[in-house]
Image (cartoon, rainbow, N blue to C red; front, side, top):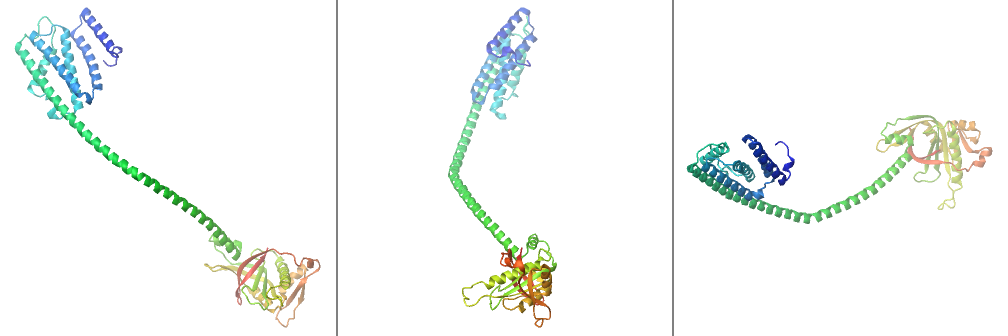
Length: 451
């Protein structure tokens, strides 16, 4: 039977199917081959069901079923040898079903029991082979008028004795299997107890360690949060310091020069064809930064306006310093001497670890000379500066005595006309500490660039 049939779904359906077949066999004179095929298919399905439902826990009942089936074989086989055959087909079918079910059940039980070779029912023994031959002979019953063998008490006794011995062997194997099952159960129970003990120990360790792990993780999180806050604060401080550093560098160097240095670019020298240099010094006053150097016209060129802007600044500073009152100098006032010159200079950065923006050229030397020749409260400008200022017609100058110098120089005294009204106007300054160097000058000054 290759597919499940509807009559196999319930026990009543199977019983009705068998009864119908028996009725048809009596009325239609069925053949032996047809009957064997019919019952063999049914037995195969039943054995399959039994194989799928049997389990290790029902091993004892399985062996009882095997013994009962062999008991049925012994009884019907004894009738066969006493009568010389079966009188009805029902007896024959009962014998074959008992044998097939017993063999299938035996196979399944041994497979589940996993017996060793010495525990199995040894089919190589002589009486087992003889039993198989006699079973085969019984299954060949012809159901004719003449029996296949003559009735014999000897064959009956032989069959009955061998089957009894075989059944005793089955009972012995049942005890062996029971012993094996108990042993396996005890081993499993031991392993289960060991596993439970280990699991309990692990749970105890986890119960003890888990709070410690939680505390440690909490402590680590707190430390990480504290570190993160400190890092954030330090980062803000670092940004502030970087800004201060940048501002300081920008104060020491022109902005375009400092940007090149920040980006590790090469900074070369620059030549400025015309700038105006301003030197001033407090008279009779010795202190740090008592000298001031101002240069207009660099680093950004502004045409020729640099001279007029420096001149305006010189007059403004002179006016403010002259009118300034100093607490510890109540009986005297501050006075400046200022020198101004216009001309060509060379500018560049000197030094790697401590870079300085330095100026070179005769123009600076001459401006310093103008300052040294200026008296207290005086402003001396060179001929170059005088020429540029005359172009604007906004400033008043007087020629100095040329006997003091080998060159022409002028006093800057004020502004002309409407320019005098704006003498004290506020100027826009940005202060930076630069360096000025020439052949005779190697001193630090405060440089104020007028924007």
